[in-house]
Length: 125
Image (cartoon, rainbow, N blue to C red; front, top):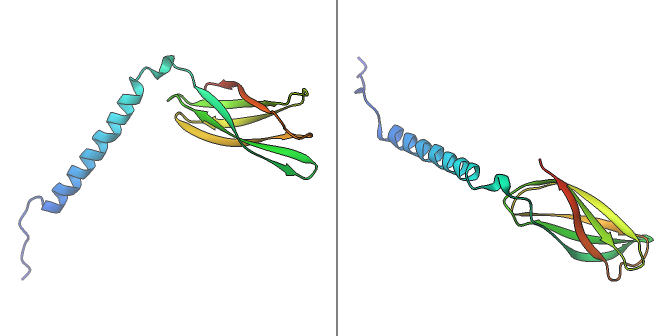
């Protein structure tokens, strides 16, 4: 004859429930913080810096990093590079989340001495 197990909640079930509750509370806290931090009135804070330059075939590649220092996401970010002689090149980065960095490259036909890079614009996602 089989023995019946006593009815009730085991210690393992209580531990799993507590972990689940803590995870749910944590996720809700992050969502609430993001919802009420006033970021609706903020704009992305974009900065572009040149990482390096290299010759690729008969052209020059200027690699850059685009930093978004605000908590707000920027989409379709257009980056422009301009040479003192008037040549320009642009690149578009699809998506730069808040407080993150994305890289890209600009291509020039002449050596990019004195290249100046800057963000031209973005869209709200």
